[in-house]
Length: 198
Image (tube, rainbow, N blue to C red; front, top):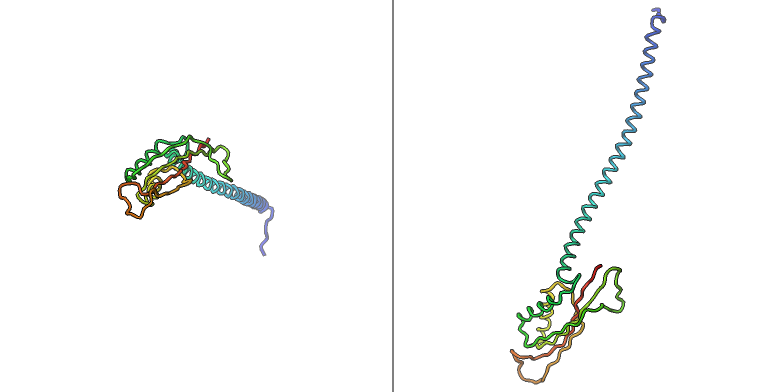
């Protein structure tokens, strides 16, 4: 049996024990530090994802805003929003008539007024205005009326409604219809809309 000299091994064992305690302390401290850094990393990663989401939302909102601005500027240019473009309405009517060559076309525009309809409520900051236009038309046949309204709709991007139209056949006879003079007379009232957004 080997005899161990504990006095000789005492110092190395103490140093070894202290080294083990220091190593265990460093391991525990390192583990806790790693856990704390993992928590910070997860928080930073979550903040980064949230920032990316907010950035994507912001980009989408800016794109949407640009689309709405383009549409709004188009409405403003056409006269649907802002000042009414009475001259463009008349020009559009006359341009359409140049294509159709109606035997008779007369019009009158009333001053702009408030748009009133049962159940219609304006939103705050938005005022809807309208101007009535009375048309007196000499037509070769009924289709001319629809062609005139469709021509107006296509040539101008403003909003108008047909409030009323009446057709009569003056001097009704069984004879053939004329290809150059009035066969039907129409009285129509259009209402041109304008939105004033404050």
